[in-house]
Image 1 (cartoon, rainbow, N blue to C red):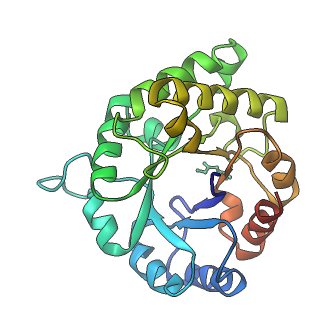
Image 2 (spheres, rainbow, N blue to C red; image 1 turned 60 degrees about the horizontal axis):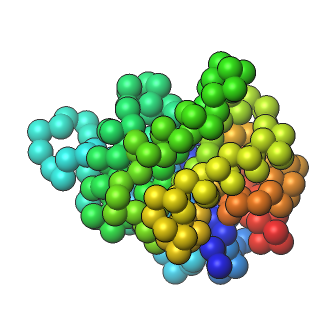
Amino acid sequence: MRRKLAAGNWKMNGTAAALSELEELARSFPNPSIDVLICPPATLLYRAAETVRGTDITVGGQNCHAAISGAHTGDISADMLVDAGANAVILGHSERREDHGEQNEDVRAKARVAMDAGLKAIVCVGESLEQREAANTLDIIGGQLSGSIPDQSTGENLIVAYEPIWAIGTGKVPTLDEIGEVHDFIRTRLERRFGEGVGRSVRLLYGGSVKPSNASDIFAVSNVDGALVGGASLKAQDFSGIIDALQKA
Ligand code: 13P
């Protein structure tokens, strides 16, 4: 059985004042029946970890460097994320791929150091609108999976997030059939590469305009084990609706 996961990606949003949202979340769900993860900006990570201490909510990073340490001004290593209290890190988000030119091999190198540091790597894949319209979605996702996921992956250290770029922050969501098609495809690819046992144990998240109002429908789709949520994870009330929906799914 795969444990369901509601993950929040705060992106470049939030200063200390935002921790009150996390406090509220921790008060509402001290012992959720699913995994709940919040990935705040790096500047808030330590305080966020302190805020959820004693609850079952965990915190994670949004990126890490592929090197263990060294002369990389402004970057953060996987060990530093662990040191600040993280147990997971989002890697290869389309905004990183776009803003920082991250390629599949960069994401794979980062995932390797993250896993070596004991973090769960949430590897993001997803097609652009042009790619979907050209009916290339599964080719693109297949290439991202084989290029970005390291060989050492297991159901414990790898989570895959399918985030169609055109659905992020737009209010547009693929049809449930479209989500199911990609998630089934990802599951098959993982089983083929890692064997049925490992392939079946990796959790697959959907991300892109998930809200309390559409969460239940999305969570009913086959091979959707939870969500990676941007905008609706910033407010405890919105994210609570998504957590509720996943707990009932
Ligand atoms: P939104 O939920 O704001 O569409 O963002 C999704 C996302 O990019 C999560 O990583």
